[in-house]
Image 1 (cartoon, rainbow, N blue to C red):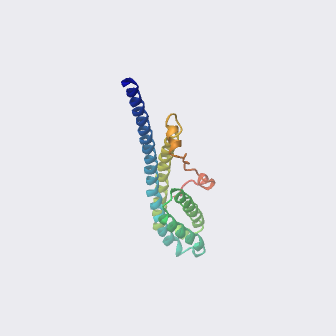
Image 2: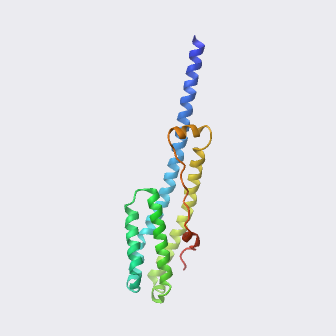
Length: 184
């Protein structure tokens, strides 16, 4: 009578230990993904904060770029108000495209291109783009570890019970693939 009870207790302890280990491992992986996105978010906010500077530099000279400037300001506001990671990524891609479009348009304005404010802003945006690229790589690595973690046996059993879903890596739009950064 004592041996079956002991075996039952050992099995229960083993199952509970497995569940706790699996849960903790997935929580750690998920927290790493959240941390990785927070690192990107800081850089994306800094880039969004450069939009008013870009507007200030361009507005006085390039009045017909007003529509692009208004779109950038609206996207910046949306980004700062958004709390959803997926929405933030989409809005950030819009900001990136808007900045790229505006910088290409500015090439037609030698007086803007020659201004010290514009040159400093270009340098700052270029530095931010490089930092964002580094953080994207870390984020995608974290996503890869998380996705692998919820798909390997035996953790996959627990992940399915808890409805953990595979997460998408940050993908680059066609425009971003073509984008070579800010030209100095």
